[in-house]
Amino acid sequence: MKFHQLTLSAALAVTTLLVSFASFAITQPNDTRQQTELFLNNELTWIRDYINENNQTGLRIKQASTPLIETIAVWDANHDLIFPDTQSSAHLNDYIVTNNYSRLEALLLTATPTAWEAYDINADALFFCQNEGLSVCVLLKAAELSTALSIPKDQLVTGLLAENKHLVASQNDSYFYSLILILLTILLGSTAYIFFQRKNKESTSTGHDTNDIFEMGDMRIDPRRMSITRGNYSEQISVRDLKLLTCLFQHPDEVVSKDKLYNAGWGRDFVPSSRSLEQHIVTLRKKLDPKRQYKPVIETVHGQGYRFPKDSF
Image (cartoon, helix red, strand yellow):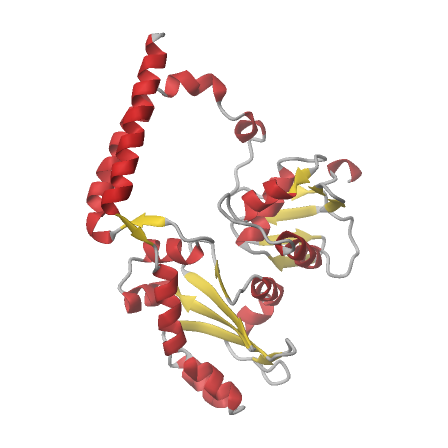
């Protein structure tokens, strides 16, 4: 056996042992999301109380005096928006709801019964939606929520935005976990030259930086502003919207399978339902072209997946 093959085998064996030991010694179930939602269920009961009393003035006063909350949106059982009242004069934070209305509706579709999404690219604010009878979406300040729960912001955001439960290092053992990661990096780095010629061709072929503005036909996508522009029309998009559009953009005129889009938008550990992707694509198409006045940038290939028809533009 060649020297570099021996080195690789030894490194992989030691890596496996270290990962197994680290997982056994310092991991625990991630209950950040469960803990946070339990806190919010107790903390935000007044929203439904004010709505049941039809007391929108009281709700606005309470919202303004609660540092945790940026804004609130509430729909009734028929999915009609009942707060904020669009028939009355707009208040300061109502623009967040009106500017992100389609985004909130799309997020509610994924709420079973709750869903989370970063409002901005730095996750300084978080949308929390709950779909039970009354559908409620609240924009929460991440720093205030972190303080209330005594959980570091980065750990909080990671736990809340995770689609599935994962094992994460406990806070008390974070130093030891970091040491394990350093050792793994050194071991894997010593064998990296073996794989240098086998890099994933797909990851280098596009040369696309996901932070740069890119174009799909007549549509410009701005990942930093989380927005799309087509002529005089512009709209906000969600993080999942951006992931799906980026995946299609990186494979122009190719049929992208549903599994690949699930991996891009939901993650490899997500177990897809029969309609999650289809429902999200329907909502995304409406968001990209609500009046159906532009060429479609997402084409359905029945029984196979979806395609960005670049050559048609």
